[in-house]
Length: 187
Image (cartoon, one colour):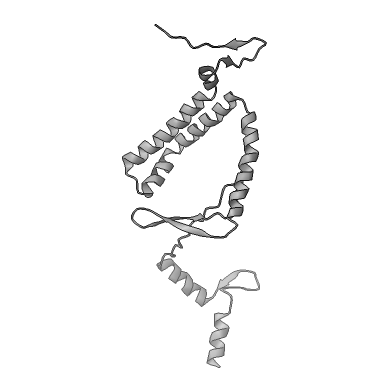
């Protein structure tokens, strides 16, 4: 009989309502609330599993496999998807489809896209440098790596609309004129 009463007491809701619809807290709820106030809740560590980036979307890998990435001290950093052959094929198909759109863009537009990418990276410098430090790079090396990446994007953004004039004889113009260049020695 005592066991039945204990089970019944455990299954009662923490809050019961009276006839006036005012909540009345039970003794067990008061005890659990007091216990919760005394000890802070433990935090669960949730590791991020990264998805693939194919064709502008983030699908999960077809194989369902992943592997952990650790830093130079052996600490866990992230889980990375292990792509299957089908994932690889899907990424090649998406890249081929994107290539036609990219080649149809003007050189000036390509330059704008690369320069905007460099700007966006520059605003997230602290994030990327911190990621490289977590991967084991020294602070100076991480800063230099980031600066080099941004500088290369700016460099190639500048060349998008200039390489034809430098390495070619016919220059594109937006009028009915014909424009060409001839390399000459400067003495």
